[in-house]
Figure: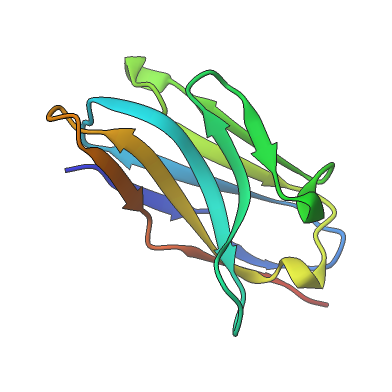
Length: 124
């Protein structure tokens, strides 16, 4: 059973930085991509950044130039951990940040897995 666990959220002042981590456990046949989404109070969940198995990245316009998504393959595990480096944070970045995995099971069925979320609060 694949599980995702996010960490690294917290309270930071405007202009500050945080680094979120998403650690994957459990096995899956293949992974297309992993990404970070966020949901602010009263708003829909939105894509922040994603990274594919070929290391192509995609960012929301609102975070381009400030956020960077990356991954490591520690322990010979593809997509072992996915990171989101967030710089020059703004109050409007305040949200619960979720990690998402898109992949395929051994039976070739598509699989989507979400983490439990980590809260980021940007405030003075």
